[in-house]
Image 1 (cartoon, rainbow, N blue to C red):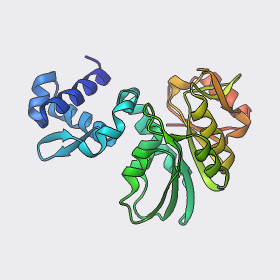
Image 2 (image 1 turned 90 degrees about the vertical axis):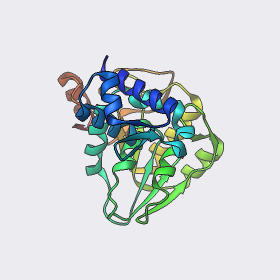
Image 3 (image 1 turned 60 degrees about the vertical axis):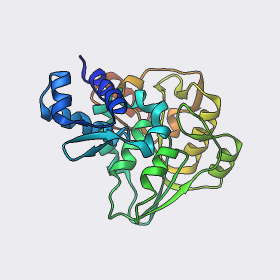
Length: 255
């Protein structure tokens, strides 16, 4: 069983049983307890389970919000972890402002935000807001709009109007596709409109996209390559594509 399939199976089993120990999971999937702990850490970071002494339980406070995105969150999980950690270098200084787009990689970035750095954080993602609401160093703003089930993102006219009033130090944006010809794209028109506004709002625009997204093109284009400053991705990016992106004056960070 591949690691991503195993983690999905673990999350399903924990949801069914309510609580499972590390040893039970190791026996069930014939892996070491160290492997189970790594898998549980990734699942907890995704907001799917909660670690407890000796095992894990469903993350009941967040599962209802994130069920629709859990499958996507498990895909390329290790690459997304590295991308999120590398993106920390793009944060502004104390007192700065950031905009966090909805997405599985931006959600990981939210989980890694330093607790000793004062930030204004604006997001359209309900799960991200839930993760940051209790942090004393974060001045959190949740954007208005209709929340889509698929991505748990606020979208629509109210969202776009609110973002258009903003000017943030850094906008961290996700994309379903990034290509040299089509730029940044996503399948949904409402999501694209919100992302387009976010790109406009950032003094600096940082795109978080794992390498499987590079070269992909989806229905709705929301930004051109000239609109972004930094792409943070993983080592699956080809040398040729990285050079082409850098030739377009984009800083490419390979995590």
